Amino acid sequence: MEVNNKLNQIRTTHKSSTKQTAFSIVNAMIIGVILGLAAKLVDAPGINPIFDNIGGRLGIWVFVSTLLSIFSYSPKLAAVKVFTFFVSTLTVYYVYTVLFLHFPPMKAIIFWGICAVISPVCAYIMWYARGNGLFSYIVSALPITILLSEGFKLRHAYLPIHTHYYLIPWLMGIYLIMIFALLFFLPKNKTQFLIVLPIALMLSFIMIYFNVLGRIFGGMNGLL
Image (cartoon, rainbow, N blue to C red; front, side, top):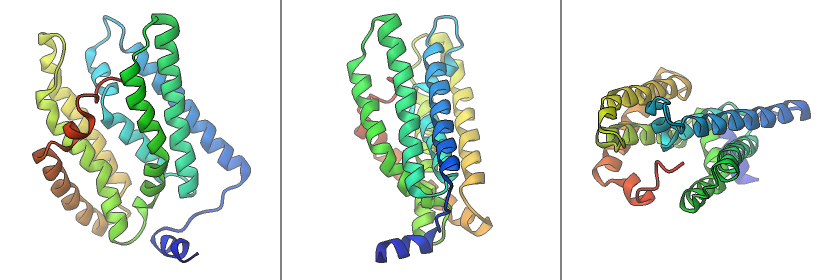
């Protein structure tokens, strides 16, 4: 009870009706199905590789799941929505891959399966990003930090066809758009914005310097 009281001081939950809850979950499922199918279809030859390089990295999934989390009635609903989103996305993507392409990429399935399993915990915490206090500021900075870190690393991105390296500035531009969008939606006011941005910049510098994403994912990022 004491923990709940402290969490409510950060951000107060809003009661939702059964209809609102169901609509939120179904909506997350539909978004997951659409993005999962889109991510698979952009693998096809002849499709501009910029789309495949977006779908195959963490950034877009961190961005979408962050928005799903913060615009929820409660942290519990945020956890359910994001888990539903990832399960829907991965189910569509890999069922299509296995049934129609007869190719079971086990390493990628395991990697993204682990991401889906831990996603409810991340979503639960992320819901408090639009709250009050230092905890909210740090939580708000985390997805921005990931996007900044991965976006910066794109300058060394591996693109299979050498002539596609011209796409790197475009990819970095898309990451900037996602970062600006999160900076718009996450902070509740100007004061929070002025605190969150320096925290994100500092954390991203640390992650880039110590190659945190590379050490954690060991080359798996990009195998969706």
